Image 1 (cartoon, helix red, strand yellow):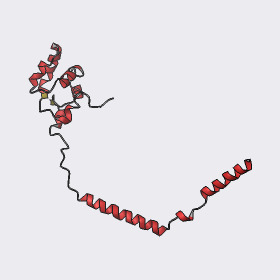
Image 2: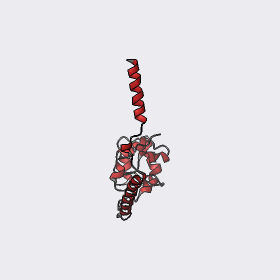
Image 3: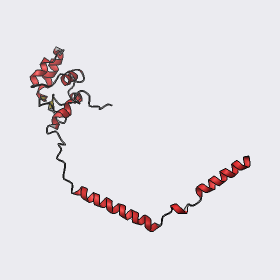
Image 4: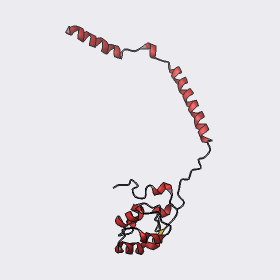
Length: 149
């Protein structure tokens, strides 16, 4: 019984490495397939080169107001922008971001639960705040934009 098992194992091993002539293709057939593939790929690439440009809005015209300048748009800027203004992050910044939108900067002083000291901090940086209409692309990320340390 052991001899039969060893013989079967030997035969299957040899059969696995034996050449199978029916599945082989000549080098010229492979080269022809490769030429066909590359010519089709070139035709598709040529069509893509003449595709019309996409006229999507890539940049928000006031992207500097989202934290790239000294002026901050309180309706669209993320809460982390206020890190640049000592004392505002995280408490006052969270209140500003979660209670918008604002029609003007003066509405910041009517945020519910704002203490006198927090109003003084807002007053300190008031010249650095502005308001623009809320943009849907940025309002959703005002409180949490997914950036973590």
